[in-house]
Amino acid sequence: MTKTDKRPTRGILPLISLLTLLVSLSGCNQANTNQTSTVETSPQAQAASQISSKTKVVTTFLPIYLLTKAVAGDAADVQILVPPGTEVHEYQATPDNVKAIATANILVKNGLGLEEFLENTVKNAQNPQLVEIDASKGIKPLNEISPVETTTSGEKDHDHEHAEGNPHVWLDPVLAKQQVMNIRDGLIAADAKNKDVYTANAAAYIQELDKLNSEFQQALQKKPNCTFITFHDAYPYLAQRYNLKQVAVVEIPEDQLSPTDVQTVVNTVKKYKVKALFSEPGVDNKLLKSLSQDLKLQLQTLDSLETGETDPQYYFKAMRLNLQTIESACQ
Ligand SMILES: [Zn+2]
Image (cartoon, rainbow, N blue to C red):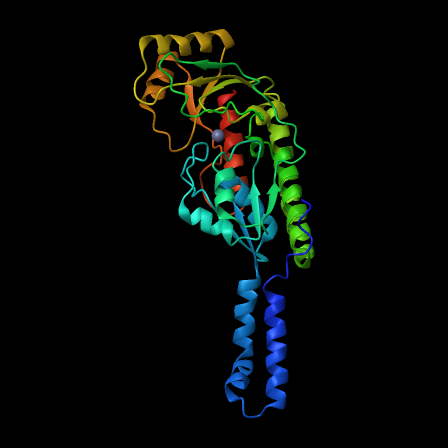
């Protein structure tokens, strides 16, 4: 972030100078009534200029939106590029996304290779002023910690084999804290006039993340090495933080499991003495349901927060539900 210093007042300064100019003009030129009336409507003009001068921040997808909105509050105008409910891993940018980036001051991304759509979209937006904040800056990514058992017919439709490691760092409250700090520092560097707001908001959110972290620690230390299988390689950071074992990621096709696929999953479950199968909210996979019944394992849902509500408090709501789910699955 080297190009962040001088931008926050862009837009408001010329307007102020223009108003000053109009005031001085009207002061010495009584005949110029039009310009005088422009100056007289200044409360509205000021309000309008305040709206337009708010720093415009675009974020990539839901978790990054939540963390950024938490830090920015109402001091900046925060938008989201990938609408919640849309798959981020294979997202295709829209013309509106290009427009949003073209007119933004700041772009906040998760990084670690997650937002594959971003590079070209930013290029197309041609916004040389844009400041990019990498929320995962300084976080050491994990590569695969769980063997991935791919079923024979499994298409790699949710491919996480990024060169930069696993990107799902926001699902560990401690790393989410690091992301909040990165976002806070980036916003302050790009928009110094709101430093106090960003600092206070970040501190409050970090305090909540600390609280969440102790809740996870306290609840899960009673269940060491609880072993689970997931169908989305989203939880290695959470597992590592709280001594759970995400032993395998089973990649399955969406339409039909072949008998060989079923056998792969059954073998995996036996091999690792798995306690739980974790699916995701909104995924209505009949295959997983019948499979879990065959295996006499509970099929529960963990929320990776890639979709959900846009209130920053949603992070805590969803993570506390995840904690309950893990606790009950790890009995
Ligand atoms: Zn994911």
